[in-house]
Image (cartoon, rainbow over all chains, first blue to last red; front, side):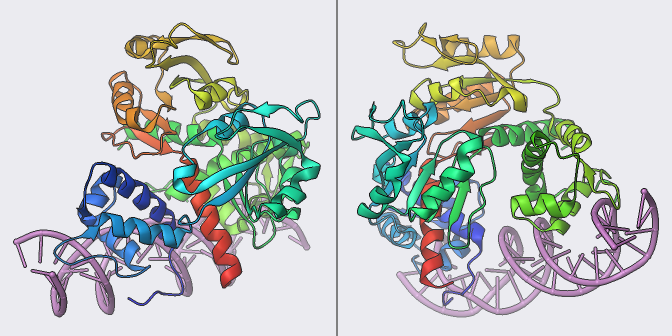
Length: 216
Length: 216
DNA sequence: TTTTGTGAATTGCTTCACAGCA
DNA sequence: TGCTGTGAAGCAATTCACAAAA
């Protein structure tokens, strides 16, 4: 299959899960993995796994499966995480500081290089990150983003400030926003937003969990 | 349309977004809202909004739209957030403590009623939550879950402990798990899992952002 | 054998377009 | 007129099933 112009969005999303699972397999010294193995570990069919991977190239070996190390490199190349990406964060509240302290980003190709907040009382405060940093005012956003070539930002400000800060981020050159505020952020074409709303996730668990023991 | 036995999963997911947006509209004193308005605020088509809502009943008023307050009540009933749900949390690291401190769950129908950790050094420590609480050992999970009728749990432990703790949660009666560990959790039928992996989100932003300015 | 890659068939979801109601 | 609810059409994603490769 020659790369089709239109790759299904769900297939791209699953690529990240394949990569994560492959890292797990490699940590357990697995050398090769079949589409069946990979599917079972993720709750997907083997056909789904094969089709998804085939959208991006021919990575498998008939009779053998996929070589773990090889596939990891390929997927990293496709996702762009073979190179390190600088990320900035706006909103150094409880959640923001927890994210700054999280050590798991680096080995997946991301590094938080600056933290900002709109509260004057927080400016200049030190935060304990992977490499500790000082909180900067939002007026510095543009300068830092361009100096460090940052295209991805994490937005962890309160809901009522979110749209304004997102606009500031976009004006500063950010082209992908990971939004933790529980509101929809409207952005122009060419800017991607991915939202994580904890209450939304809990709601979905509630319905699923209930639907199960009421009928299914 | 009589409620069809099979409601599309994406429609159920969007229900949460409709509810959130309606809360925003109500905060701005909007009394009625059309499918067009609701769609525009969320980046969806008006037809999509109407069809989604119609899966669950006839909530609209031709010529008028949907009454905001009425629809909020209906959606809460469908999602189950008209009653408060008790939630517990396992893993009182940086992220876990940030989640405990988050004030936004309550008005969406969720309350974190207990926090657990596997580290003996943390047991008994006080954590500053909406109502402050003391960290309990995982051996108390079953007792607390049944005493307080908890069916939903937040899992914010390190990756290598995640599956084991998830198993403990399920054994304690938890039927929905919000997983922040960057691994796939395998669960039996009847248990729902929703995962939030920050690195996965960042990866998706990276590809989207890149795909845009390379071809589209 | 085992396992991939892939057209074809199928299932599922979204959009269209319009009758009917306020 | 303005707007919903909904069959029908169209589009997208998944599963099937098998030829080809090791």
